[in-house]
Length: 118
Image (cartoon, helix red, strand yellow):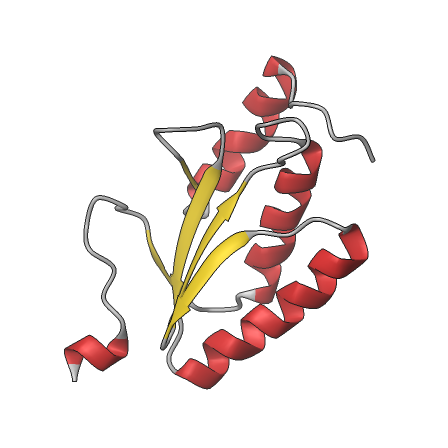
């Protein structure tokens, strides 16, 4: 696998499908972001554990945070300072591993975890 920036053709092919699943472009850099809300902390942690194994295998790692049931992920490839095929593949893998978690698509809204809504 190569760590080169996605071509315009690859972007036109891959990014719309990812957008349909809730991935959004980062306004300040060439990166993708997605926010998942799981039912519990354990579900969120389990998701992160499964993703961590996939990341190690691919030698590609997200920038992510976890607050209780929320996992907030940013994907970009540091070697090429932008989106690469690695990011697309990891985004697709994460979507499969997330199951039926809720997705927050409006990133301008504050991210609220279950601990704030109880």
